[in-house]
Image 1 (spheres, rainbow, N blue to C red):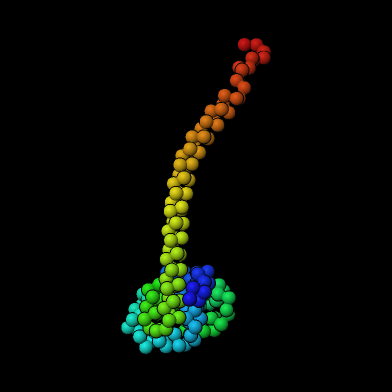
Image 2 (cartoon, helix red, strand yellow; image 1 turned 180 degrees about the vertical axis):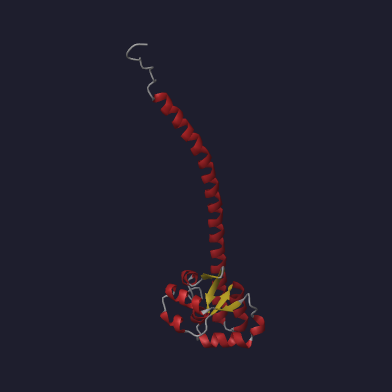
Amino acid sequence: MKKLVKHEVIEQRIYLIRGQRIMLDRDLAQLYGVETRVLNQAVRRNRDRFPDDFIFSLTRREILNLSQIVISSNIKHAPNVFAFTEQGVAMLSSVLRSKRAAHVNIAIMRAFVKLRQVLSLNKDLALKLSDLERKIEKHDSDIQAIFSAIRQLMAPPETPKRRIGFY
């Protein structure tokens, strides 16, 4: 079952929309080995299990923007595209009751966890980088002052000019 779905395939199908990491109904249906309409039908039959923070419908603009990212152009002509958050994907395993769905769901959850860890690591690195930049800026002004002092020392001393003529 490990050869069922590769993590790289799942990670490529996780998008950031409305500030949330989501997966599209088409991608999930393909991973689960069912048609998109079958997946959406199962969700509609169990709508009480999918609150608005688990699943939402994409707007026409979001679909068009996403169709530029997604390789398949069929998405831009789709009348309705559902986006599942991480919790929505987890809930799908209770709606789609097959061994494949359970194993695919485990792989998807692992991909979400791995993505969260990578983002957390990147956040830590970003904080360290900004702290380092602040330190460099402080030292940068100190270094500029040292260079200015060195330039003043290197400049030839000004000798007073003698006036020509009568005093």
